[in-house]
Every structure is written in structure tokens, then in C-alpha cells.
Image (cartoon, rainbow, N blue to C red; front, top):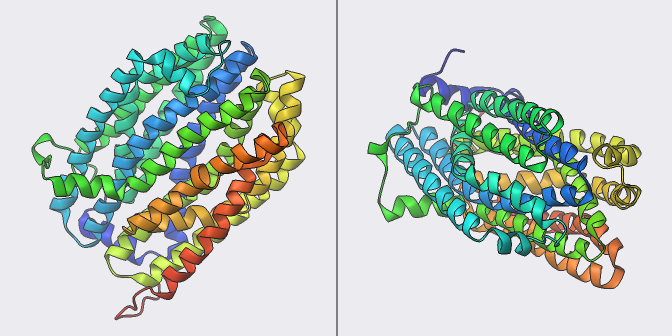
Length: 455
């Protein structure tokens, strides 16, 4: 694959027709998201063969993985957004400084998470919603995830820098390789070597290390405009704050995902391990489909950031509406199909009749929410990409926080298990309603360009 130099990359991101550009950048990120979620679902599938409590453990540890992702995305999205705007303004030196600083900060943060998590493993699992019957499985699985935490964190930084440089295809190769290895590892360690849930954890940890190594090799072989070098690390508080503050929406979004998972597990746990297992399966299936919208949205982010930095505001607006409509078509179509085959989908992961009954209804209700997500995702990603950090942070608190956590607590109190099943959809509708005024105001006050752009 021929690599573009700085000027060629600038022309590519500012002159390629928007529909072509978003699709080109969105396809690799979508494939990466889907493969990542496929191997997460593979864990759920193979672990589901052990028992209902083991299936519930996957949901418990998902909250831990959300914490790791929160830190990785904070540094990754924070650095990526700044780098893309710097490259749009043709400031390569600053981009390299930000990339190196974010990478090493994130490795250090991953080491802290690993150390803290392993020392306080039992109370951490209980805090995330584990029952006594789920706890032994959760501890084994989580131990492997924590050991791999530094590699997972750093991978998010490398992946996002590549995306924001417009080189998502390179990150796709690394992530897909790790994902396919994870699936093979699940099959080998669990089905053939009968290692149980510890096999799923080992497979996941090894795949994360492989993905990290492949991503890092892209930077070490000079295939990127920005570089990862120790000598470029900035110890200036202004640079560190800029990375963290720009990435704050991602930290908030993913952090709240962990908290909401903990609350969800706690509410579902009142109705037994079957309810936790069912909601775990539902969330895995929904996020797999949601990954398509998220992947398309991540293809939109470098387009928005780069062109905003280059002051090509018409392209920013055009990219937003194209991405929104594309996501609506894809997610809407999949939602309809999913509603029809919901019971079959849940049954793939666990053959427990009670799990299937709870999961089928919850899955159908959550599929309805997919129609509301494209606007929410595109609005949040737009604001974060162009540095509107306050608005982006607030919007990030909605779906998994301000709109969801009170909803599930209130609905569970009044409607019991039904409240658990419908709470995410209600939260998504509230998020949609709140997001609309933000995007209307933004485009109404978008600066005018000096020269019209026909691309």
C-alpha cells in the first residue's frame, strides 16, 4: 500500500468528495469494530457453554473492560483530535509531540489499572455487580484482562491516531488480526483443551498483545505522519491538559458505561443469575450492531476534525449529514431484521429457557432504540473532533449516565424486571431529544467560508 506524504494526505482529506471519503474511512473502522465485537461475542458464546453463572461473569468483566477503554479512549481520542487538526493546519511537529506524549501516558495509566485491579480483585468484582455464584468465574476472567491492560490502553491510542490521520485501513489489519486470533484461541483453549473461562481470558489477553504489537509496528516503520518517540514526549502541563481535556468526553462516556454496567448488573441481579446473563447477551448483540453505526461515525471523525482545522466548514456540515443518513439506513434495516429473529439470537449464546425469555423481550425493545442512535453518535463525535469539549462531554454523559442510570433505577423500582429490560431504550430516546438542539445551534452558527467548496 502506497503511503501518502503530508501534502498528499492534506489534499486527500480536504478535496476527496465527502461521500467517498467517509465511506473509505468508515469501512476499515466498521470492520475493525465488528471484528472486535465478534471476538467479544465469541467469548460470550464459548463461556455460555460452561453455565449461566459463567455467562454472567462476562457481563461483570465488561464493566472492567469499559474502565480500561475509558482511559485508552481518553488519551486516544484526545490525541487523535488534536493531531488531525494540527495536520490540517500543517503543523507536523506538534502532532508528533502530542502522539508521543499520549502514548506513554496511556501505557503508564494501564500499568496503574493492572496493579490496582489485581490487588483489589475480589472487591472490584463485587463492586461491578458480581453475585457470589458468579464471582469465581469473574475473578479468573478479570485477572487475564488486567494483565493485558497496559497493552489494551496503548492500542486505543495507536488505533485512534491512525484513524485521525486518515489511515484507518492500517489499524484495521492489526485489530482484525488480533480479533481472529482471539476467536481461534477461544476455540482451542476452551473447546479442545477444556481450560474453562480462564482459557477465554488468556485468549483475549494474547490477542490484545498481538494487536498492540502490530499497531506499534506501523509507527516504528515510519508509515505515519506523526511519530512515537521517547524524545518527543512533552512534560508541559498545557500539552497534557489539552490531551486529557479533549479526550474527556470519551473518558466520561466509557466511564459511565462501566458505572451503568455495574448498575444494570445490580438491578438485574435481584432477579437471579439468569437475568444478568440475559442482559449481558442482549448488550453484546446490540453493541455488535451498534458497532456499524459507531464505525461509520469513526470514519466521519477525521473528516470533521481535519476539515474544521483547514477551515472547510461546508465539508464538515456535508460530512455530518451524509454520515447520519448512512447510519440511519444501516441501523434501521438491521433493527427490523433483529426484531424478527430476536429469540434465535439469544438462544445461540445460552440455551437456558429463562435466559431466552428475558433476553428476547429486552432485545426487541433495545432494537427499537437503534433508530435514534445515529443523530446522537454523530453529534457527539462532531463536537469532540472539532474541540467543542464542554458540549461533547455533556452529551457523553447522557446515554450511559444522566439519561440511563436514573431511568433504570426508577423503572426497576416501579416495574421490576420489565424496568430493567426497557430502560436502555428509554434512555436512548431521551438522549436523542436532548442532542437535537445542540446540532441545530452548531450549524446555525458555523462560520462562513471565504471560498466556496464544491467537493
